[in-house]
Image (tube, rainbow, N blue to C red; front, side, top):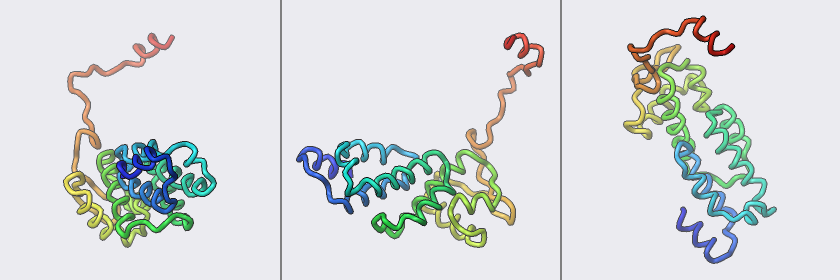
Length: 181
């Protein structure tokens, strides 16, 4: 993708709209990396502001922002309304769900089923099969311990279940007040 976009920058020409938007869409599933920023930085400002891509590019920016900020429910709402964007690859939604699952499992140890279904953009009755598919795409980055009727539980890690250092002294209220005042 980067080499393709760089060739347009070097030639000084404008890339085809469907190709440009398609490339940017394909970077969204890896929102937890810098793929989108690397690609969009190669698109000159005059192309980004061009009327022929301005609306669709704004939508892709919004989608990337929702994913990067952990606003997964809003991502799915906007994605489902994005009829003006070119068709994404058949595995696009599955790959986005895998990326979301990686982020959620590395941040939270337990998630209510209803919230997890909303994060993944599916109904609660579809959650089990969606989790299985997303976890297989994510590979070793995700380890689901259980998924019962109420909670999805991921394997503990230092990130999703931090433990305090046993050498820490508890703070007393009088100590905090003396610092603040």
